[in-house]
Image (cartoon, rainbow, N blue to C red; front, side):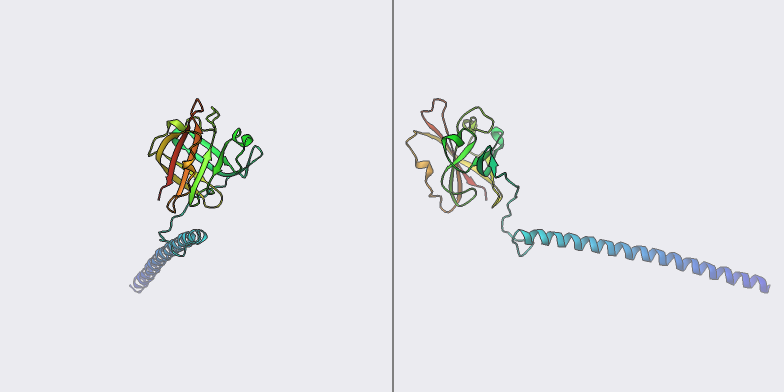
Length: 207
């Protein structure tokens, strides 16, 4: 009888120990999971703050617009590059050369007049209507409402929306005006097929 009672107590003691060990193991795992989640959450928060701070922001939820940046080549076929122009509608992707000349126009589209890329003012870009894939051959197929982007190494990539398209005589230079009401505008210029007129495409930054 005494032996049986003693064995029973030992068994109960072992069961209690086992239950305690199980509960301790479960509790430890739960604590570890919570700590890992906290660390992940803090890591994400730190990364968001880091990116925001890098972009010159003081708060994560700042309403200030952030422009996407990509590295633009500084030279193309021996000519200095100031920006990259992409017009999805006509599948055009081309570099905008810095200095306007007969030689540069034969290589790519070129800044002709006005402000620098993505700056306030009217940046005028001229290009031949050659069949080359990086020229303004298909500029005539654009419509009001179409969009394009200009990317540079200072500000980033800005999207513009076309608000006017028209033709003028070569001596009409009114499209070069810098009166943009303190907005960012782009004017794309090319010749008609017979070179008797200029096709003018006016666009304004999408805000």
